[in-house]
Image: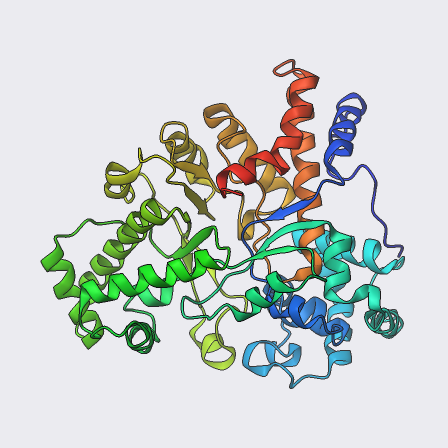
Length: 467
């Protein structure tokens, strides 16, 4: 079967509305990409080495892709996932993927993969058991060409800003090297991600605190010293260009505890003596403290809440984290964030971006919160929701309450470097389709829709992330 991209994909079926959507999309199709939250390793751009092979590029490190194969009965070890990285034959991995290409029909992953294969590699036939080897050889050959190195693709994609996600103790030398390199014209920003330093349930919590406090020269059991050490690491990130701190929490509970109670809980956390309720309370207090620090130092606070990480114990033990078995949870923001918002929600220049994979929270909680608090911004559809139909539901859920200007702009949130333009293009087409419907229904003018379409990919993310 042929592999192709319909130039009017994701636009409304009605010819008149489709024409409006097409015109709106054309205004934004080639605008620069602003990607203020993602997981691409900065060393990819510093080293600028050729990608190793098609399997490593498209499959092994993309849990969107591998989870579909695993659900169909393919062993993750046969895909070289996680702790099995490097143990599988890349060509065999690619053959498994191609033989199961039909699994991706109608999925967001299938949409992005098709976009990548067609626009980047000129592939005109669908992957299959019969075409696997020919496609592998074709892509492998292209990957050795200079115009397929990471920096060349960065320029080709039109990326203006790319944020990474980084451990608080990272020295950020890679970011410094990129910033000092006159041959690299992009803006690559670190993001402070302190989850494993705030949650005593994290397996590495004690080791992380030992490193953090040791580097700061404070006693490990000194709560005030611990807070000061976190503040210094945030300052280190700001000096290297960071604009945000990201928090991936299971539950977005916040608590403002008395200093003596927080200090007692901290000593218990370091000593490993907290029970589940105490661990929950300490983690909630630290999310509150992160907001306090963002008010003080200006880092945008993003909260990615509501995911049960590593749902399959056997898979986690065999292959490690981020291997495709993180599952959405019901999420509650309104009461959980009330202590935080009572303390900081009206503070000038505090920015709090709320994400979720429970899409019921958009109309019920997030849009109403963003429709009142100047500090609250609506995080874009994330993870399982960054897909064409979900984006339409998202726009319908939040726009009538909060409009178009209380959002974060599109967030690709990806480790898959080649999928960045596909994801942003999808968002631009989806927003053009939504705006075209409003124009057709007489709810906004065409000129207003044209302005909004541009702002959604430019002014909106710049404002939310202080760019």
